[in-house]
Image (cartoon, rainbow, N blue to C red; front, side, top):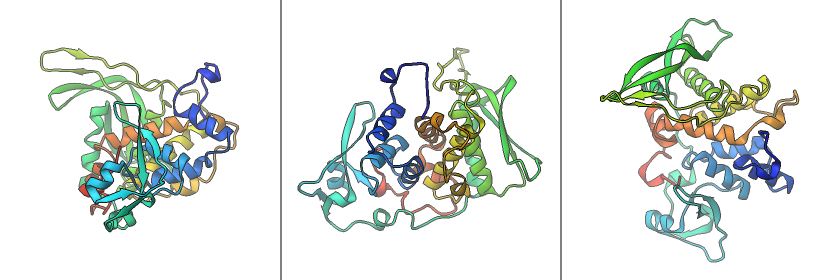
Length: 312
């Protein structure tokens, strides 16, 4: 897990919670937890991880009220709730599909991955058009078979109009144009993983200037982790790519890469919080996992329907 200069009892966030769970033998191995988060695209990555720690066999969760309102099902007597983070609040209680009874469930709850398909060229183009809103210029070039892509901080930022604002582009991403579109999407997710895990230094949303000439300079939201070892960086970035791709139904070969933590002594610095936070930020570029899946895919998976939208 990630380390800081603070004393252990002063650390906050999911990493401290995760390490505490590991200390008492209550959490699965990291690879298992990542697999669980990947299987839960209808819920935000942080909350999926919390559910994975509490009950790894869960399939689909909602509040008692949502189960009753959306699917006509009631919480079974004696069912134990699961605790997740509540938007703009502390926590809320949710129940897995195994904890409710009543009306038959739709197929997307029983088989959430019944439909998968490749990324389309148009869908990928729509996704890359969202990158400037994060301060990233996107381009493709001939890079050779050994190089999929790279993301770097620009020495001299560029400016581009995004919506009604001029936006500063502080980074440039270049992807190998010879890759198929699925591989391009996985590569973009990997490079964004580096950025949003702090591997390129501290990150803040881009500076913008509105029509009145008023400049907005957001605060840093991701700390500098550029001193993390190379193996740990690659593990985190590839974890982000594997999770994002899996949560929107895109096949990626990263599963073999994620078979184990880095063996160079940097495993203790791999941050679960950084990985999940990066997944959330990548998905947010498409409006969340459900909307991103519908944006980039040939078909709209059964999971991405109005009825199947779960708690965030």
